[in-house]
Length: 346
Image: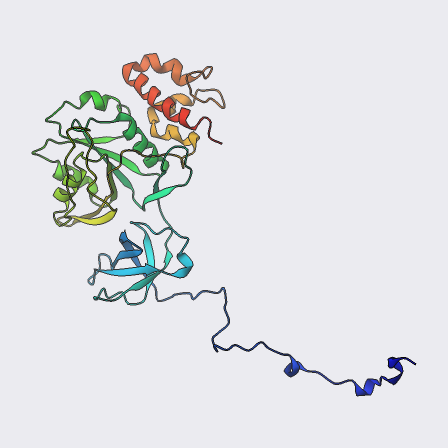
């Protein structure tokens, strides 16, 4: 006799949803969800600077209540880089009163990103600044000696980011910069010059109005001095060049956005720490020619897949270099050095 013989369907208990066991929630809090609040009350602010996980932002830019506030980032943005120049969505107490701390909950779409890497083999990019539309390269005619190839790298990074480059040559009373500037003939590059006792403040200032301009340059070239002349309240530290090594001492330790005012005209000066190298590991080799527009035009006649390296067959740039003279030869050499760096990169 089986146990099924004693089973009566009428004895089967009836179940409903009240009989489902639910694991208790001892903390009586709401269950986790991936849905984030819309933050419809967020205000858009400009990130002026970053310091140890705290972000100084400008609230009500160009409005009657323009002021700064201190913020932190929301947990959901922990993997999102937030940099100077970003347009951030901020919630919380944005009054800027002492002891208050608002929260960045989102980043607006960026119009440009200036990036660099530790070296040319490092493809991990480091964002220098967001939303800049101009780059002002500051270089000294002497003390320290100008470095053509470092400037080439600045130009490649700027043009890769869609940023218009400008240049200031300082300390022209110590050396004639004409030979150095010959290296950049043929480029769409506006150049300002200055001596120790005269900075081209008015000329440079006029070019800053209506723009967000990032200042870059080797340590000791006078970048911070120029920034302080343009923005008297900046208070950026200035240094000197070591007479033994010929190198400048790092003075600016962080990237900051500073308001430039010239009467009714306004713009932004973004000062960056001085650097002795500017890696281009994030740049695609095919984009390097964008930093050499004069050579890029010649490259249109090159065969498909031309590397433009010294051993490249039928390279139109190499064939035309004699017509370009010493300037063209120097620029082709600079381009080939950069291209060779990327030749073996996977």
